[in-house]
Structures are given as C-alpha cells and as structure tokens.
Image 1: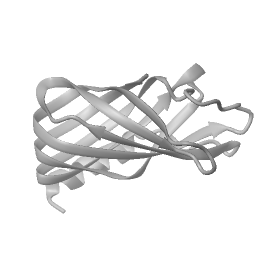
Image 2: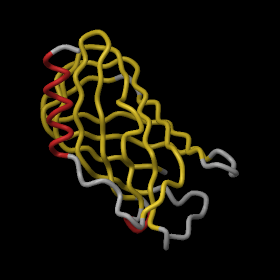
Image 3: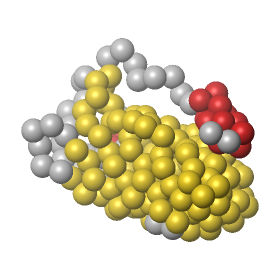
Length: 153
C-alpha cells in the first residue's frame, strides 16, 4: 500500500463515528456502483446505483448521488462501495426505508487502483447506519478527504 493510501485510511479511521450501538443489529448489506467523475478540488457529486441485500427478502434497488465536501482532486473511473447496514432493534424496517439522506466521513486515495471508505448515518428518520463492509475499490487518479453525503431514492 502506498503512503498516500495509508494516510487517507488513517484519517478516515480517526474521523469515523463509533461502531453501531449495542442495541443495533445488522439488517443487510448495501452495494453501490458509483459513476466515473472528476473531483472539483473542494468537492464532487457522482450518481450511484445501489442494491440492498437482506436475508430472506427480495433485493431492493436504489438510485441517488454521493456528494463530497473537502479536498477532492483527480478523476475516478469505476468505484464500488459496500456497506453493512445497521438499525436499532426497535426500528421496524419496511422495503424502501433506506431512501433518504446520509452524512458522515469519507476518505480515498487512488493511483491506478485505490482504496477508500465512507461511514454514514441517515435514511428514514436518521435510523440507519452504513459502515464499511470492506474498503471501497476504484480506479483512476484521485485524493479525497472530507465529509460525504449520500442521497438514496
């Protein structure tokens, strides 16, 4: 791993919120493909196409956009982000409930092939937490550290 990627991952871990509360349970996995794009120095906005997988339930599809505010310099080609989805045990989950706005920390570094991560909280009534399942993988030339916002509909 190059130094730039290591620094970015360290910054992300330092800025990440605490793990899901003890009364939160994992309800599934959200997998998103992010459109190629260019960082505009102080931020970026890219379309996403997502699938939510939950054991014993049909796959749900969401579209939306991921916006980053902070340092975002460069160009990315293809990106896949995977999150574990957590909800409070008292939360009743219905299909479509992941739609909404999420906010959190983001960091990535790419030189050819790169790594990154995004930790986000939001959705209906801000009742869901998206935590990295594995580090996101992407191709391109990019450095981004800052705040992220994800909108799903």
